[in-house]
Image 1 (cartoon, one colour):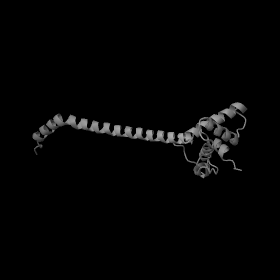
Image 2 (cartoon, helix red, strand yellow; image 1 turned 45 degrees about the vertical axis):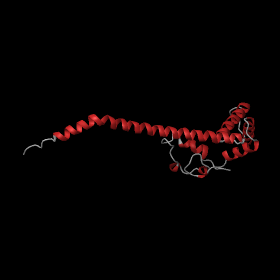
Image 3 (cartoon, rainbow, N blue to C red; image 1 turned 120 degrees about the vertical axis):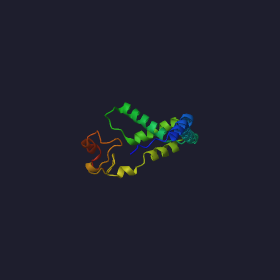
Length: 168
């Protein structure tokens, strides 16, 4: 049995092709990858620009967006903790009123600020799900979902003690 001879002509043509065109193919792939990245970057810039215009239009109308409400709520909570001490109870109504005043101080319309606070603090459907933490109807420990990154690091006894109490 004789061994098959390689097709030297095919090998030579293949080597010649890669020598002449190989770099071009590689650079075409690089160019395609770069254009793909450039397209993604342009899309990201477009989204950021749209978001900026949205926030600016809301601010012109005197309507705060969620980040404004969150920042004001944080400041109000901090104020009341500084005033009463870290161990004193915080009263949500006082924090809400203080948040509205902070938003007014920042240039937002009082009525729009009050509405934005109410929307931001509205009850959320996931708080009624027994497998969600925090939940108003916390279920059995074995049904509680893991965190986005895996198992809970906080002991379940702490979670149940905090969220598992009967609600009034």
